[in-house]
Image (cartoon, rainbow, N blue to C red; front, side):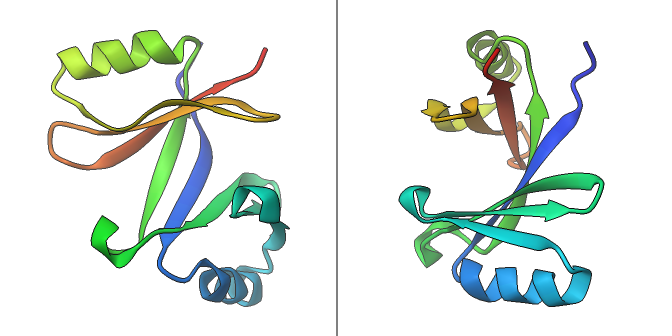
Length: 117
């Protein structure tokens, strides 16, 4: 199985403002998910994703790409042996599956995604 990108996530200090911007600029479909404090977006036939609020102390706003994996725990373990730092350990996302966020050895964030089977 190829390890393709399957989700993009904007971590912003003002996701509502960002959502309005991208909706007007690209005509993305925006779908708030209030119970998760999250906003989903679809980009036509392209890769979609979500937007979430971060505090300024978490750094500047940034995009995190997610890569689909078959076994997220094994992938996190392997990444750590290769020098990655775990930023957000494996967590369950209701109705989706599991995700984790790492920083590669250069400090760049990358998400891992294991959709439910």
